[in-house]
Amino acid sequence: MKTIILLPPSEGKADGGDNKPLKSVSGITADLIEAIKEADPQKLYGLKEKALEKAITVNKELLSSKTMPAIERYTGVVYDAIDYQTLENKSEFDEKVLIVSGLFGLVSPTDLIPNYRLKIDKLKAAKSWLNSNSEQLKDKFVIDLLPQAHKKAVKYENGIAVEFVLKKAEKKMPAGHQGKHIKGRFVRWLIENNITDPKHFKDFTEKGYTWTGEVFLKEV
Image (cartoon, rainbow, N blue to C red; front, side, top):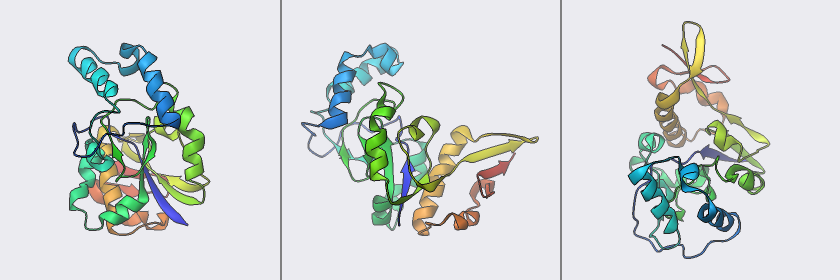
């Protein structure tokens, strides 16, 4: 059974690109682009002034702007920690990782995409993608590193959800921003060591996290 690692996209994205524009799209992506055109920008993006203007412009140019591989487009903390460019076995990463995008569904690291702006909890994007995404995950073993909003866009029969949790004075809490970095480091470790079985998660002990059999826990 093939192993798939599910990651969220990053809100931060690189501008530009060296590859041709998409020019046209179909299906759910096309429907969402139409919905973006009709939506109230302030409600859709939750941004103000220059940031709002940029988001509007980026989405207006979706089909005319240059593209780049998704792994280069996404620039957030998780992707910085993965440090894709220094991976020796990039092909293993490209084969196993899928990114759950609000606009494009399940995206491979090598898929060429433009800059865009759409959170998965807007315009019912997660619900729109659920059936299509879930169909693609049939007969796969999933290592799920998704936040709650993105989990609503997928269903899988075989797999494990991985969370990073902090424990302080007997109280447990999500690792938050720090969790994004360790999530990226964990993905890199999975790829570098060709880990596909959760029984080996106990061997990942970076930054003081320990696998309990259910979550990665760190006492602070």
